[in-house]
Image (tube, rainbow, N blue to C red; front, side, top):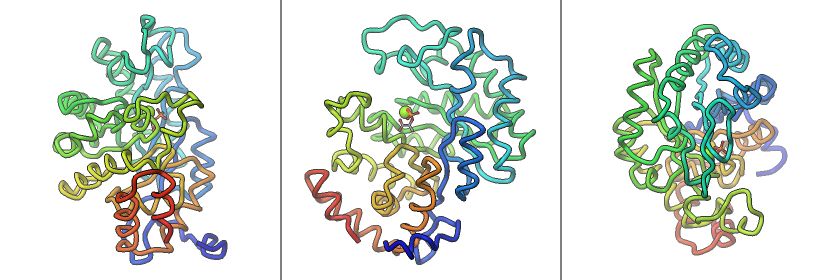
Length: 309
Ligand code: PEP
Ligand code: MG
């Protein structure tokens, strides 16, 4: 897209022929939320709630959590916001959850797995989120990180609904969950793909380790093929499947993701206008052709080249 085209985004994520692909912000603090709103985000696709806990030696009270979440949600009154429940573990330790040291923290008790032993911590967080939804007027959905199976997704959705929150989803960031996207969508209202972790677990390559960064390239055809399964599941069920990992911030990959059937893209504030404008330069059929071309390649460089509009 040219610079002139990029300046023209009208704030509604869609291809030039009107196929909606919502453009959302990733946030982790009130300042992030304001920046996303100022950049024109249509809502929030990932609110990382860890910020509220990181410096706490004890679990924050429901009232403290409710106030902290309300401060983040307030710029999005009347708009959709996906709040992610606590994503902690031995790799992101929290004093009050005192995780055991683990030999492989990325493969250990992290994300939703923490809640299986301590469901009351999850329930208190859900109570605070439900309160913050009321206080802020945002249209709140809740999703869980690090879900591996359909059974886990159903367990989480039941607890979310018991807390009086209407929409429950899960992140797809474990390959087994991507392979079961269809069955998972049967038990939740939406999914959102965390491409950072999905790449890490697909390629068995630590996302924080520079030496294996080449494997974590979101243009890897092996990752695109998993994303296609998720897009196909969204089409088959008519339920939303977004992307909230870094991949969504790449304006060319955004076209491929739209072509694969993903329904929203969520990113840090600086990428919002560029991605919104990029989508507006192509039709859905063009996105589908780019996706097909990228899927037919054997390496990331070829996928990038094939997806040039
Ligand atoms: C991801 O894994 O892609 C993701 C969005 O979650 P986080 O980066 O917080 O692990
Ligand atoms: Mg993740």
